[in-house]
Image (tube, rainbow, N blue to C red):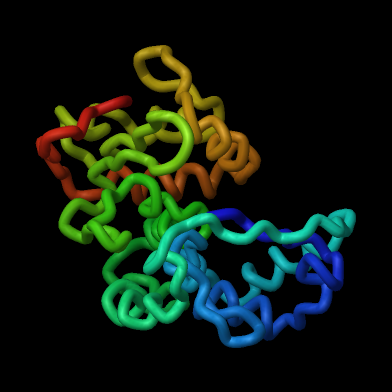
Length: 231
Protein backbone atom coordinates (compact mmCIF):
# COMPACT_ATOMS: atom_id res chain seq x y z
CA UNK A 1 0.00 0.00 0.00
CA UNK A 2 1.18 3.53 -0.76
CA UNK A 3 0.12 6.67 1.08
CA UNK A 4 -1.44 9.43 -0.97
CA UNK A 5 -0.60 13.05 -1.66
CA UNK A 6 -2.18 15.13 1.13
CA UNK A 7 -0.76 18.52 0.15
CA UNK A 8 -3.20 21.28 -0.83
CA UNK A 9 -2.73 20.61 -4.55
CA UNK A 10 -6.31 20.71 -5.90
CA UNK A 11 -5.83 17.97 -8.50
CA UNK A 12 -3.46 15.40 -7.02
CA UNK A 13 -3.71 16.34 -3.34
CA UNK A 14 -6.61 17.30 -1.07
CA UNK A 15 -6.81 20.99 -1.93
CA UNK A 16 -10.36 20.61 -3.22
CA UNK A 17 -11.59 18.80 -0.12
CA UNK A 18 -14.10 20.51 2.14
CA UNK A 19 -13.96 20.35 5.93
CA UNK A 20 -16.74 17.76 5.76
CA UNK A 21 -14.73 15.65 3.30
CA UNK A 22 -11.77 15.63 5.69
CA UNK A 23 -13.92 14.86 8.72
CA UNK A 24 -15.58 12.00 6.85
CA UNK A 25 -12.23 10.51 5.80
CA UNK A 26 -10.79 10.43 9.31
CA UNK A 27 -14.03 9.73 11.17
CA UNK A 28 -15.51 7.07 8.88
CA UNK A 29 -12.72 5.85 6.60
CA UNK A 30 -14.59 6.92 3.47
CA UNK A 31 -13.28 9.12 0.67
CA UNK A 32 -15.20 12.15 -0.66
CA UNK A 33 -16.58 9.85 -3.38
CA UNK A 34 -17.74 7.29 -0.83
CA UNK A 35 -14.99 4.74 -1.55
CA UNK A 36 -13.72 2.65 1.36
CA UNK A 37 -10.20 3.31 2.55
CA UNK A 38 -8.09 0.25 3.32
CA UNK A 39 -7.16 -0.43 6.93
CA UNK A 40 -3.52 0.50 6.21
CA UNK A 41 -4.89 4.03 6.76
CA UNK A 42 -5.53 4.06 10.55
CA UNK A 43 -8.99 5.60 10.41
CA UNK A 44 -9.96 3.05 13.08
CA UNK A 45 -7.92 5.20 15.49
CA UNK A 46 -8.46 8.64 13.94
CA UNK A 47 -12.22 8.14 14.28
CA UNK A 48 -11.75 8.73 18.01
CA UNK A 49 -10.41 12.25 17.53
CA UNK A 50 -12.51 15.34 18.17
CA UNK A 51 -13.86 17.35 15.25
CA UNK A 52 -11.73 20.29 16.36
CA UNK A 53 -8.49 18.30 16.34
CA UNK A 54 -9.30 16.75 12.97
CA UNK A 55 -9.98 20.16 11.41
CA UNK A 56 -6.84 21.59 13.02
CA UNK A 57 -4.87 18.91 11.14
CA UNK A 58 -6.58 19.97 7.92
CA UNK A 59 -5.73 23.61 8.63
CA UNK A 60 -2.07 22.70 9.10
CA UNK A 61 -1.94 20.59 5.93
CA UNK A 62 -3.40 23.55 4.07
CA UNK A 63 -0.28 25.58 4.88
CA UNK A 64 2.08 23.09 3.19
CA UNK A 65 3.45 23.75 -0.30
CA UNK A 66 1.20 22.07 -2.87
CA UNK A 67 2.72 19.15 -4.76
CA UNK A 68 1.57 17.83 -8.14
CA UNK A 69 2.95 14.35 -7.35
CA UNK A 70 0.59 11.73 -8.78
CA UNK A 71 -0.73 9.17 -6.31
CA UNK A 72 0.82 5.75 -6.78
CA UNK A 73 -1.56 2.81 -7.19
CA UNK A 74 -1.44 0.13 -4.51
CA UNK A 75 0.55 -2.95 -5.46
CA UNK A 76 -1.32 -5.75 -3.70
CA UNK A 77 -2.97 -8.89 -5.11
CA UNK A 78 -6.63 -9.80 -5.16
CA UNK A 79 -8.60 -9.91 -2.87
CA UNK A 80 -6.49 -7.46 -0.83
CA UNK A 81 -7.03 -4.82 -3.53
CA UNK A 82 -10.84 -5.15 -3.47
CA UNK A 83 -12.35 -2.24 -1.57
CA UNK A 84 -15.64 -4.10 -1.27
CA UNK A 85 -13.82 -6.45 1.13
CA UNK A 86 -13.69 -3.57 3.60
CA UNK A 87 -17.46 -3.82 4.15
CA UNK A 88 -17.38 -7.05 6.21
CA UNK A 89 -13.99 -6.03 7.69
CA UNK A 90 -15.46 -2.81 9.02
CA UNK A 91 -18.40 -4.72 10.52
CA UNK A 92 -15.91 -6.75 12.54
CA UNK A 93 -13.25 -4.22 13.49
CA UNK A 94 -14.44 -0.63 13.03
CA UNK A 95 -16.05 1.19 15.94
CA UNK A 96 -16.95 4.75 15.06
CA UNK A 97 -15.87 7.55 17.40
CA UNK A 98 -15.38 10.05 18.78
CA UNK A 99 -13.58 9.13 22.00
CA UNK A 100 -15.76 8.91 25.10
CA UNK A 101 -14.14 9.71 28.43
CA UNK A 102 -14.37 7.18 31.24
CA UNK A 103 -16.41 8.66 34.06
CA UNK A 104 -14.51 6.68 36.71
CA UNK A 105 -11.11 7.92 35.57
CA UNK A 106 -9.27 11.19 36.14
CA UNK A 107 -9.13 13.93 33.49
CA UNK A 108 -5.39 13.25 33.21
CA UNK A 109 -5.96 9.53 32.50
CA UNK A 110 -8.64 10.34 29.94
CA UNK A 111 -6.37 12.83 28.21
CA UNK A 112 -3.68 10.17 28.01
CA UNK A 113 -6.13 7.56 26.72
CA UNK A 114 -7.28 9.98 24.01
CA UNK A 115 -3.75 10.80 22.90
CA UNK A 116 -2.59 7.17 22.92
CA UNK A 117 -5.57 5.54 21.22
CA UNK A 118 -6.63 8.32 18.84
CA UNK A 119 -3.96 10.89 18.04
CA UNK A 120 -0.72 8.90 18.36
CA UNK A 121 -2.61 5.64 17.57
CA UNK A 122 -0.16 3.46 19.51
CA UNK A 123 -2.32 0.29 19.34
CA UNK A 124 -1.94 0.20 15.55
CA UNK A 125 1.68 -0.91 15.96
CA UNK A 126 1.89 -2.36 19.47
CA UNK A 127 -1.06 -4.76 19.06
CA UNK A 128 -0.74 -7.89 16.88
CA UNK A 129 -3.13 -8.41 13.97
CA UNK A 130 -5.01 -11.49 12.91
CA UNK A 131 -4.87 -13.06 9.45
CA UNK A 132 -7.26 -10.49 7.97
CA UNK A 133 -5.58 -7.46 9.51
CA UNK A 134 -7.80 -6.84 12.53
CA UNK A 135 -6.27 -5.94 15.89
CA UNK A 136 -6.29 -8.85 18.34
CA UNK A 137 -8.19 -7.32 21.24
CA UNK A 138 -7.05 -10.01 23.70
CA UNK A 139 -3.42 -8.99 23.06
CA UNK A 140 -3.95 -5.21 23.22
CA UNK A 141 -0.54 -3.47 23.46
CA UNK A 142 1.11 -6.90 23.76
CA UNK A 143 3.70 -6.28 21.03
CA UNK A 144 3.70 -7.06 17.34
CA UNK A 145 5.92 -7.56 14.32
CA UNK A 146 5.64 -4.60 11.98
CA UNK A 147 4.90 -5.26 8.34
CA UNK A 148 6.95 -3.54 5.69
CA UNK A 149 10.69 -3.02 5.05
CA UNK A 150 13.05 -4.28 7.73
CA UNK A 151 12.50 -6.65 10.62
CA UNK A 152 10.99 -4.19 13.07
CA UNK A 153 9.05 -5.14 16.18
CA UNK A 154 6.82 -2.98 18.36
CA UNK A 155 7.36 -4.28 21.89
CA UNK A 156 4.92 -5.18 24.63
CA UNK A 157 4.21 -1.92 26.49
CA UNK A 158 1.77 -3.29 29.06
CA UNK A 159 2.59 -3.24 32.77
CA UNK A 160 3.84 -6.82 32.75
CA UNK A 161 7.11 -6.85 34.68
CA UNK A 162 8.87 -9.43 32.52
CA UNK A 163 7.53 -9.06 28.99
CA UNK A 164 6.29 -5.48 29.15
CA UNK A 165 7.47 -2.23 30.73
CA UNK A 166 6.07 -2.82 34.21
CA UNK A 167 9.43 -1.92 35.74
CA UNK A 168 9.34 1.50 34.11
CA UNK A 169 8.18 4.46 36.19
CA UNK A 170 5.98 7.23 34.88
CA UNK A 171 9.10 9.41 34.71
CA UNK A 172 10.85 6.70 32.65
CA UNK A 173 8.02 6.71 30.11
CA UNK A 174 8.06 10.51 29.89
CA UNK A 175 11.82 10.51 29.25
CA UNK A 176 11.40 7.88 26.54
CA UNK A 177 8.74 10.04 24.87
CA UNK A 178 10.83 13.22 25.04
CA UNK A 179 14.42 11.97 24.51
CA UNK A 180 13.97 8.43 23.19
CA UNK A 181 16.06 7.16 26.11
CA UNK A 182 15.17 3.96 27.99
CA UNK A 183 15.86 3.29 31.70
CA UNK A 184 18.79 1.06 30.63
CA UNK A 185 20.44 3.95 28.82
CA UNK A 186 19.63 2.70 25.31
CA UNK A 187 17.95 4.80 22.66
CA UNK A 188 14.70 3.69 21.07
CA UNK A 189 15.31 2.53 17.52
CA UNK A 190 13.41 1.75 14.33
CA UNK A 191 10.07 3.46 13.71
CA UNK A 192 9.96 4.66 17.35
CA UNK A 193 12.58 7.25 16.45
CA UNK A 194 9.99 8.92 14.23
CA UNK A 195 7.35 8.60 16.95
CA UNK A 196 9.63 10.26 19.50
CA UNK A 197 10.34 13.07 17.02
CA UNK A 198 6.63 13.82 17.34
CA UNK A 199 6.01 13.14 21.04
CA UNK A 200 9.02 15.30 21.93
CA UNK A 201 7.03 18.26 20.60
CA UNK A 202 4.07 17.59 22.90
CA UNK A 203 3.63 19.60 26.06
CA UNK A 204 5.09 18.11 29.22
CA UNK A 205 1.57 17.72 30.59
CA UNK A 206 0.48 15.69 27.54
CA UNK A 207 3.53 13.42 27.79
CA UNK A 208 2.74 12.92 31.46
CA UNK A 209 -0.89 12.06 30.63
CA UNK A 210 0.30 9.48 28.09
CA UNK A 211 2.63 7.98 30.70
CA UNK A 212 -0.18 7.78 33.25
CA UNK A 213 -2.38 5.93 30.78
CA UNK A 214 0.36 3.57 29.58
CA UNK A 215 1.31 2.76 33.16
CA UNK A 216 -2.31 1.74 33.82
CA UNK A 217 -2.44 -0.88 31.03
CA UNK A 218 -3.20 -4.36 32.42
CA UNK A 219 -0.17 -6.69 32.40
CA UNK A 220 0.00 -9.05 29.46
CA UNK A 221 2.56 -11.84 29.41
CA UNK A 222 2.63 -12.61 25.71
CA UNK A 223 4.80 -15.69 25.29
CA UNK A 224 3.53 -16.91 21.92
CA UNK A 225 6.19 -18.21 19.51
CA UNK A 226 7.89 -15.49 17.54
CA UNK A 227 7.24 -12.79 20.12
CA UNK A 228 10.14 -11.09 21.80
CA UNK A 229 10.46 -8.37 24.37
CA UNK A 230 12.42 -5.34 23.20
CA UNK A 231 12.56 -2.51 25.67
